[in-house]
Image 1 (cartoon, rainbow, N blue to C red):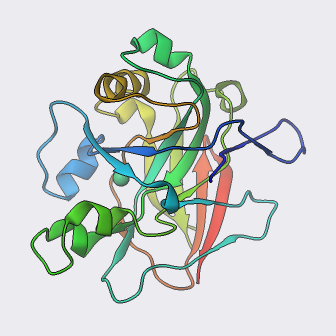
Image 2: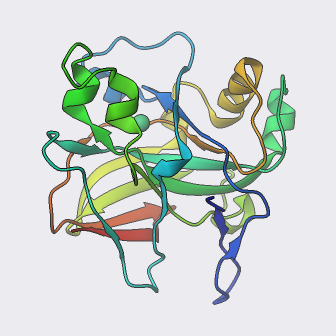
Length: 231
Ligand code: ZN
């Protein structure tokens, strides 16, 4: 079981959320620049897929020794997709945009790790594209979650991924094709979101492979939120 962790104020250690995660709902191509870099058409409604709970691993905060992350071997490039992660605070079924806005228990960051070859070639001996490409163990490292007040999200939420201290991906929630409350409401029309579920809201441009030795740092509103090391 995976319990998302809530960031506390001042120097208090993070605390486990009261509900475990039952699923991670991911949104594909929610930023124009990323849809273009993969030569994919821009979706007319949110593209959804699920990452299973075995993919969840807790990334460390900057005060801790970085999480050591092992990537699958012999399966081609494993790409990073940094995304804003939303922690669902209460059950949502056919929920309005307004209900969804008030059901956000926290905002964090996640890396939607993707075996790009498996994702691109559905007809290979590796079989179906989604699960092999997206659901291997530890394919979804997540940060601690901050409250909306802690990150001052009134204007927008900006975020970035640094590898070996170089910025490789940066995004801002205002560039999303479908905004966060709309996504939550739209997902809740398709199936029930439960307290503890996590939504990954899509990745901006700049995806690329990770290799052994890479030092990873994720920033939310210009603050380091999580770190990891590829071993
Ligand atoms: Zn993604």
